[in-house]
Amino acid sequence: MTPISRSGLGRRSLATLVCGALAAGGLVAAGVAALDPGAASASSHREAPLISGTPQYDNTDLYAFVSPDRPDTTTVIANFIPFEEPAGGPNFYTFADDAQYDIHIDNNGDAQSELVYRYTFKTHRKNGDTFLYNTGPVKSLDDPNLNITQTYDIDLLRLHNQKLVSKTKVADDIPVAPSNVGKASMPDYTKLRNQAVYKLAGDSTTFAGQADDPFFADLRVFDLLYGGNLSEVGRDTLKGYNVNTLALQVPNYMIQESSKQPIVGIWSTVQRRDARGYYTQVSRLGSPLVNEVVNPQKDKDKFNASSPWDDAQFLKNVTNPELPKLIEAIYKIKAPAEPRNDLVDVFLKGVKGLNQPPNVRPAEELRLNTSIKPSMHPKRLGVLDGDNAGFPNGRRLADDVIDASLRVVEGELLGQKTGLSDSVDKNDKNFEKSFPYVAEPTSGSRGPLAKGTGSNVKNQLGDALQTGSGSTNIMLIAGSAAAGVAGVLLIGAGVMWWRRRMYNRAY
Image (cartoon, rainbow, N blue to C red; front, side, top):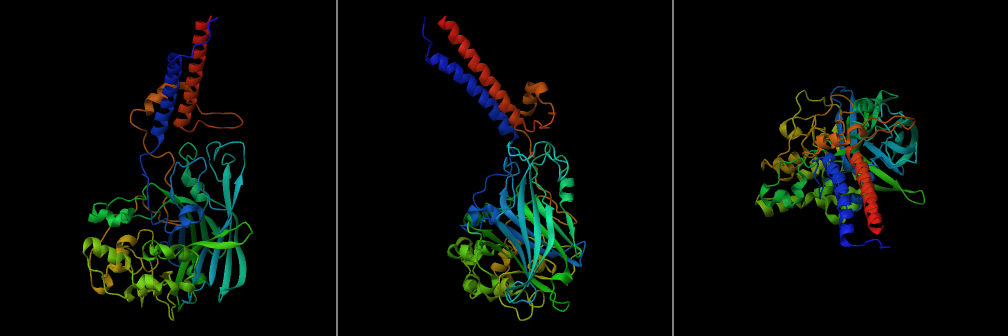
């Protein structure tokens, strides 16, 4: 009997088949991978060393504005989890179960919370024996095919001098809109989004779920300010990425101190529970870009753990900012003289006569005058362009905070007009005209197939591309999964051929 051959020929033949099968699967997997968004190495969303490693607790942006279609109300939007890749399964994006997501309202300018809206979440799983986020097409938020779901509660805390006065539950077990897995999984995502908008007592409204990231900017600013010669501007680095959104709309009178004092300060925080059950604040956000480009590295984590009441410790970062010096060194635009009291007025107190409350204590908050009606024709530069309903009087979704902030930092309020811009003037998606206003999230199935793969693979698979049926109701959702199955079959056929060949040679 001749022993089974272990020559290089046998190994190469099998290896060729295996590699060919894997390559076929790899091509289709590459084909369904979208071309955008590209990888990002830095972000204003990842503003401090510690929080950059825990995205579930990272508050990426905060918005507050008088609702354009309901001017008797104020809408607050807080976003979390930066750079959500739409196709980032199988574990898609959820709020943390061990966190308190808080929206703070300071309605008298004392840098303390008088009201706190606290969101807490709970994750539910229907079937632990599958890797799927959904086991079939999802047609409603209570669809049994939606395997991973979340619900949330909202508690309203009333405080005086930083001490709890009362706590009221205003929402209980409200469903969260899921991540937009793709067209096969969620054929009518708008319907799911609408089902997640809930009316609360007192004419308030809430929403929690995934959304398109409304922040638009060229974040290559961190490549030594747009490439050192303004060659790196004009690209919306956040195009195609999603975030998790909390949106709350409340009547103005509920958050104002009084009709005579309608100015409120707003910020958001996240507290994370440790192993002993205690909560520690790990994220904080008020005005945009403060912890990114105002605070130096040594203060970033400290800022995230701090409260506005204690912001005097960061005052020098505002009065003697680093950014103008960096711009002067690179572009020879003279930095305004220090101390920068103009920045203190705008970002720590509010603009006098516009959104500065009486007897204000300087603190980093997003300040909004709720008595100013929405603009009929909003201007992206807000107050700088004569639109007092915009940034820094609160922050609307379409406000161009990068351009406005660059110009203020470079001394626009002191008479030095530079016209600085990142050349990204609007979001890649249009915002909604009604609550929750943020655009729907980009679908995980967005984007074309790689050139030359789509029709060929469909023709090769033929009848295999049929909708599944039966008790599990699991569909063949992705072409890459089909390619994987085809690859396994090819590998199996190769192994059988190799064994038959070796058997025939042996006998």
